[in-house]
Length: 155
Image 1: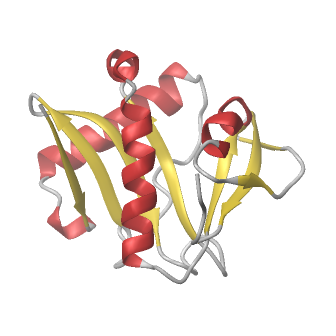
Image 2: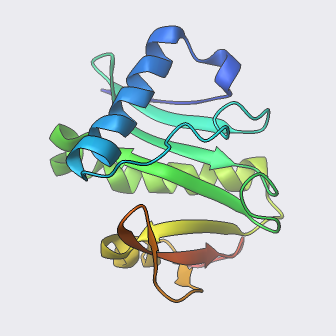
């Protein structure tokens, strides 16, 4: 059974924080072979929420939710979207994105959402109402697009 949690930094136990950071490192640094500053001072901001799924006491999915102004001046943001490699076959990424959007809109209902999406995931994000709003750009050696989603989107 999967349980979902959405917490501010101070609510995370040391073990949970370790597991969240390990998952992010395992996927973004090791699997994607990308050296980048994952610890970017946004995790500890007072409005930041850490959304994660536990299955058998193991973190299997994670996303970081950021308030308007913390990453983008006029948008909230969903970032660090990641699913453990062994859990991808279970389509948890879809449940994660659905919950991330719901939580973000519940927390900040009047603000559109902006993301920096890896190019190979553009169609995935488009299926959740995001549209491309930038030319492709390279971030940490990986092609990305800025994408936005308005608060009222019909899927």
